[in-house]
Length: 139
Image (cartoon, rainbow, N blue to C red):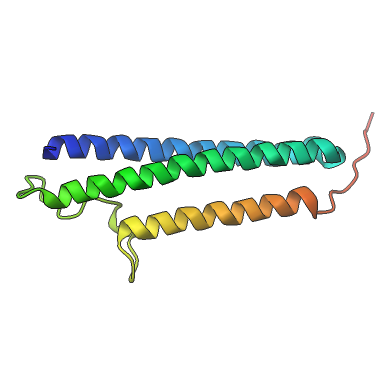
């Protein structure tokens, strides 16, 4: 692969990552809104919706794992280039994502998986444990 092809694929992977994160935020926001407005008073529907949420998270996680795998391949191809005209030695996240002990790709992947796990646990709590206050219809 040439340097231009690797960069083009890296940009497409970044766009796909942004789309996956956008879908994640949309699903979480819609689920919280559904819990607040009507799922809090329908236990069986709440269970079914939580199962669908879990399936959606598994699908998003599978896509993210695939992108992570493809990103590793792009990184390996980038390292094998004999000379880079862009001057970038590393193909990966910006310096902001890099940590003291991990390189940027690993730190970003860990942060994303931890965020997903924390959000899933929080939604589990809101679905099954949180005591939603009963609301009276005003009319």
